[in-house]
Image (tube, rainbow, N blue to C red):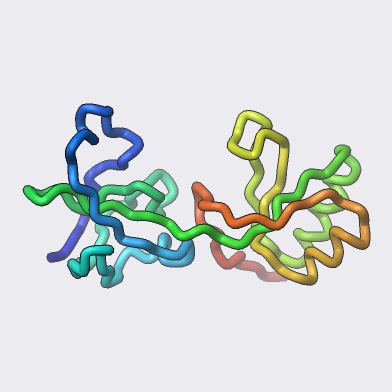
Length: 161
């Protein structure tokens, strides 16, 4: 079966819609969320081809919980594997600026979250890198290494001088 468009997201379903519905999962690493054409297999062994014509989300990437298929057997939804990240929580605007500048010079992609997020603090999140961890330790910047399912996958940063 070929899937050409997303049929919604599990987060949009009401409790009544979820009740008694069988959900198969397609487990994907974050890097696979940006691919519009790929072959996937559910946790029940069903193979699907993805040929997504329209962007699934506002940024064009698949998201955790996206429904790939609705049929008589139930739903097939995306489940994203956690990503190894550094959650950086600078203690001041100065420390944040210096850190963001240093990491920007490495062309690392960062995601930012506020205190109202699941992090419960103002943080910058980057993919784990041992050299970044060393820099943070050397400069006394508070951080924590975590496994997180991120709302947006990291992409390779395009760059020219």
